[in-house]
Image (tube, rainbow, N blue to C red):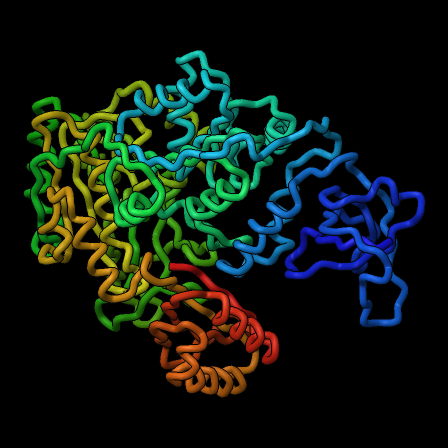
Length: 613
C-alpha cells in the first residue's frame, strides 16, 4: 500500500510513501502522519490519497520511504473540499499547495476529539450584503445567528478594529474568543481545537483566521470587505481574504454576510450574481469642502485658524492621513540628492520614536541614525510629507493646552503602547485624534464634529481600485461625523473626477461602467508579475523573448490575454546580486497563462512572484 502525502513546505507537489502492514488499518485520506522528509527525520504530513502498489508508477529506482506514525483516528479535513480550496489558491494566486497546508495545520493540536461532521446540513447557505455602519445592528445580527445555533466568525481588516469591537461586544454577555497575530499560540491552538470539536460558537478574527477548522453551519461576517488590509501578498500563501472566504463557503456550505457602510463596485457585482442586498441604513455624506494642497497645506495659517476656532467651540476633531511618518521623503534642495536605503535603494522615511528621530525604510525595514545634512553637498535637507507624526508634533506645538491623541500601525508594536492608547481612546478624553486609515472601520464606534482627510492619489493603472477604496473611506468617515458636522478633504489633485462624485450614492455605477469599458476587474483578472534572476544578461534576453511571444495575436488568444504591458528595463536589487523585471497582464482566465508562465520560469530558473491587483 502507498500513501500520497502533502507536506507543509513551499512546494506544489505531493510525495509517495510506503505504508507498513502495521499501519494499513490506520491510514486513510485526511489523516496526519509523521515521516522523514528531505534531510529531516520527523515531519508532519497530510495524506491526500491511499493507493495500491499497482496504481502508482514510480519514476526512479530508489526504495520509497516509509510512514513512521499515523496521528489521527479520523480525517481532520474533508480531503476533496480541502484540495479544492488549496487548488483554487494555487491556481489563482500561485500559492504552493504545501504553504496552504502549513497554514491549515499550523495551530491544529496533535490530540483531538473526533466528531462526525456533515457539511451538507445547509442546503441553501445564505449570501447577503448588509449596508450599514451601525455596530449595534451588527451585534444584533450576531445575537440572532447565535440564537439559531450557528457558529459565527466575524472578520475584521485589522487588529485595532477587532479589539475595539470586542470591547463593545463584551458588554452584551456573549461569549467569544479573539484570533489574531497578537494572540498567544496557546490560545490559537485552543480556538482551533474547540472549532474542530464543535465547542466554540463565536470568534472575532483578522484575515489569518481563514484557515481555521470551521464546523458545519458556520456563518462568515466580513466587515469592510474592500479594505486593502484584507490583501495578503507579503508572504505565502497569497490570497484576497473575501474571495478566499467565499470559496471556502462554497465548498463547505457556509453562509457569507458582507457588512459595509456603502455599495462598492465589488459589492454591486456580487449583488448582481448571488448575494441579496439589504440596505439597513444609508450613510449620508455631510457638508464637505475640497482644499488644494498645492496652495494650502496642513501647516498653513488657514488650517491653524480652522482648528483653533473649532477647538475653542469645544468641537471634537478627527484628522486622517494616508501615512504615519514624520516625512515621506527627504531630499536636498541644492543638488536634488535623495536619502535612500543602502540595503534596497528605496527612499527612506523619517520616523519619530519617543521623541528620537531616525530614518527607516518601509520596504526592508532597515533603520539608520538621523542627520539633516546632505551626504552629497553638505546642504541642509528638506523633509516632505503629511504623515500622522508630523501632524501630531505640529499640533502639539501649536495647541499645548489641548489633548491630542495619535494612532497608527505602530500602536500594535508594543503591548504597553496599545493598552495606553485603548485606555485614552475609550475614555473619550481628547480634543483631536490624529490617525492613519487603521481607524477607518465601520465597526469602530467614534463620533466627531469635524474630520480632515489628507488624500494621496496614485496615477498608476495598477491602482485602478483607488476610487473604490476612496469612496469606502469617505462613507466610513462620514458615519463618524455628527449632525451639522463637516468633512474637509486636502488633495494635490482637486480636479479629479472622484471629488465631483462625492455625494452621488450611485457613483459605483459610473465606476463599474469604466471598468467594463477598460477591462479592469471584475471584468478581467489583473496581475503584476515579477521575474527575478541572478544573471542580468540572461534575464534581459529571456524577458525580451517572452515579450515577443506574448505580443503575438495567436498567443494572446490561446492564453486568454486581454492586455499585456511591461517595464522597459531590468532593475538591480540593491544590496543583492539579483535583477528583476515587472510586467502587468489582464486576463479573461488565468489558468492557461499561468501554466505557460510557470513552465517558462522553471525552464529558465527564474524566481516568479505574482500579485493580483
